[in-house]
Each structure stands twice: as structure tokens, then as C-alpha cells.
Length: 82
Image (cartoon, rainbow, N blue to C red; front, top):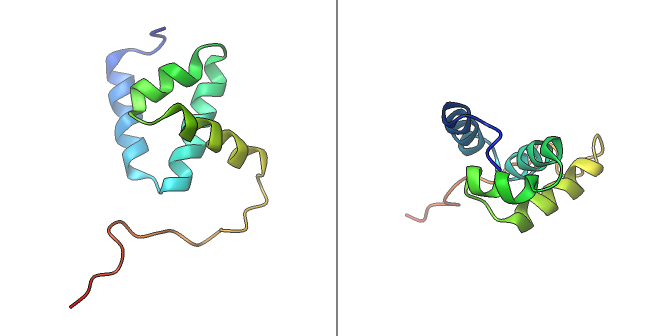
């Protein structure tokens, strides 16, 4: 399955990489859902994530607009020790 041109895939990946972890899951899930059958596998390959991540994102999307973690975003790399 190759429904998107390479340039679109590049933009999707760049956008995906700019998101928080939870938003990445949600974005991937919505993209996969738009494609229907085979979408999860295709989007996982485009974005470089696991199919499990996309399935977890689907659960996250089902919970919207309720989000117990709203406003909490983990920082990349965690705390630095001096």
C-alpha cells in the first residue's frame, strides 16, 4: 500500500517527529484510520513507529476529549544531574 507520494510522507514524518509522545500516537492512529485496511502497517512504516504504538494511539483517540494527562508532557532526555 502506497497511497501517499514520497514528499507527503516526508512531511508527515517531520510533523510526527515534532510532536509529544502522546500526540505522536494519536496522529499515527488517525492517519491509519483514514486508510482503512492495511493502514496501521503502512503508517507504521512511514512514521517509523510500531503497530502497537498506533493501536495504543487509537485507544487514546477514543478517550478524547477527556484527557487526564492534559498539560503534562515528558521532556526528552529527562532531568539532568549536575
